[in-house]
Image (tube, rainbow, N blue to C red; front, side, top):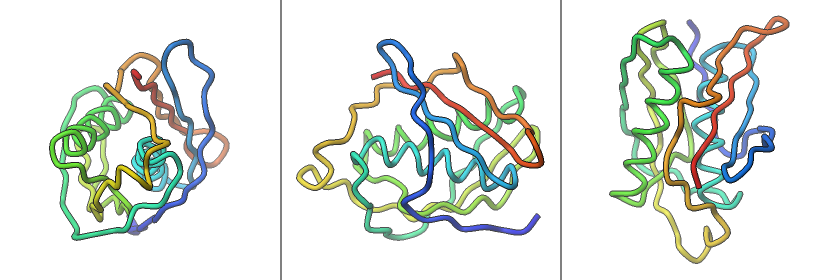
Length: 147
C-alpha cells in the first residue's frame, strides 16, 4: 500500500435521501476512497468552508463487517470527536485498511462557528445504505447521515 494524504476540498456526490443526507465518493484505491469519505463528512459539517489543519491524530477502528462497516465506524468516531472537541479533519491519510481494521492519521482543525455556520448538523452516521465496493478499476463508497 502506498500512503496517500488528501486535503480539503475533495470531490463527492450528494445522494438524494429523504430526511437524511448522503454522500458518494470514488477513488483509485480503497485508501483514497476512505480518505475522501472522511473529508466529505468534514465538508458537510463546515458547509464547504475549509478547515485549518491542526495537529495530527491517529484514529483506529475495527469491525468484522467489511469495508462499509469500517467506514461507518471511522466516521462515527470522527463525528464523536467533532461533537465533544469541536475539531474535524482538514486532511486525512489512511495508514492501514484491511477487511477488519482501519487506521488513519487526520489533521484535526478547529470548528469555527462563524466561518462554518452553513454546515449541517449531523446527528449520526448510519449503516443503512452504506456501501464500499470495487468498481470499474477503482472504488466507490457511500454513506448516509442522520440530520
